[in-house]
Length: 597
Image (cartoon, rainbow, N blue to C red; front, side):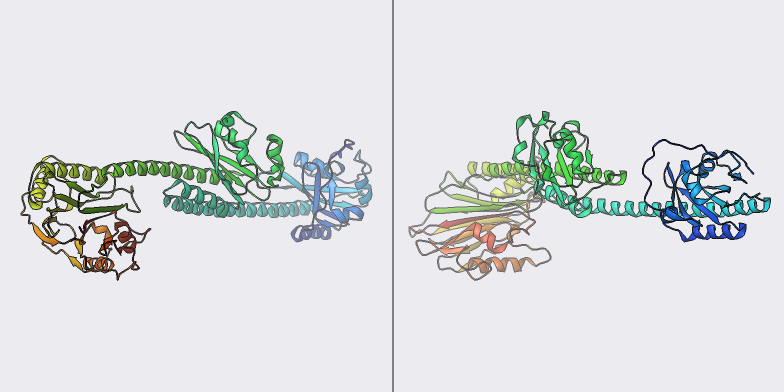
């Protein structure tokens, strides 16, 4: 039991009181129990609202303004002593003691006071449970034990609520972590499917709007030196546009994006006022919402800046900062990968263009070709066509398919094509003999390409313009002949083994007569093969297109020439048979037409 002098009046100005304290049923019950058990007119549960004020969530006997607000300055009350020391305060006669004289005490007509501390889970005194009478009172030991027990019960209620809030906070944090983990998984999956810079930027900006509640997303990419920003995805974000495209942008810290690029550290602004206060150049029409700017950086380079805008104020706590930082990191990795893929595609395109040389224009023969890369992969592959006018005057045409559709396949194709050209020019052999020689060199020189090849040799014209086409197939799909009459013939000679499997295996020549106006169509398997489908169905589709009655009919793949004989357009044949965005294999088509005299 403690008897002590009350607090001294504090005349220093204090901050405004919080508006009101709402009654709480649990604390109201403690006040009623205390009033009933001790038979006192005023019983109060006081809990700290801040460093200056206490509120009364449980109260009996309050009058006037205090009954309305349930608020009291700590300095004007006896509970200040209890809050400061954590010890009970018992005053049998306030008027006889050298106690505080305040309007609150006069309003409440305090004559005797007994208050016990309410202690929370951390051992901190956060309030009091007190009894007040309007006449001096000698508090008995029994009354003080009842007050102490009720104060402990009240403290238990405080602790239970603290634990409940802590548990709820932990639950919300766990839920948020789970939601953020799912967001990151979604972001990773979406970005893993991107292959171009534009796709990465579209996905990234879309995801920050969809997944973090933003209203806009923007990306500025840095140049190769990391010194010049260019906004490539800015939507409606104010202040992002032509005004900041100069070469001295790197040193112009009047723009937040430039500072992020220079320092490689993010900037967080909870409101737009914070933005304009630090960066006055930023336009006021940006809206009142939060703004985050994060560097797109990899281990070795700074790629740019991503900007996220919200419509309203946003507190950037650690979970939100971690989420945005991780999303930005994923975006930077995807962006770097897309740039590498683009560079690889560019290299592949240059390589493929170099390997597919221009076709010759021999007398009396029209040659035409088309190459379409696979939609997936490096957009280059092992398919090729070639034609060569031999020293004898014969015309050699070839089409082949090295396994794979990537840069490695293209490199092997280039070596195989060069070997074949050398043998064709040097030796006057039949197609079967030339392929046998090529297969032996393919293995013997260490190229070891696995490839299907169809090699044909067009002889000199007879008196009536007719010619003989001799061919040999190393496991390649059969060629077609579109006759001058429009009839379509499939050249079904036996297909020998592909190259690179069994050098020395027997190879065979086949021959067919061609008349003026006839066209030979050579192609690779990507034109006719479909996954899970028999090859003959693809061959039938091609025959129908060449006859003018299959997919794409209407005169495009095969159209009458000025001489009346059909003219086959390789590009149109591909378009008629292969959807533009669905093929996963590269395609080559070569046509040889015997021109009428």
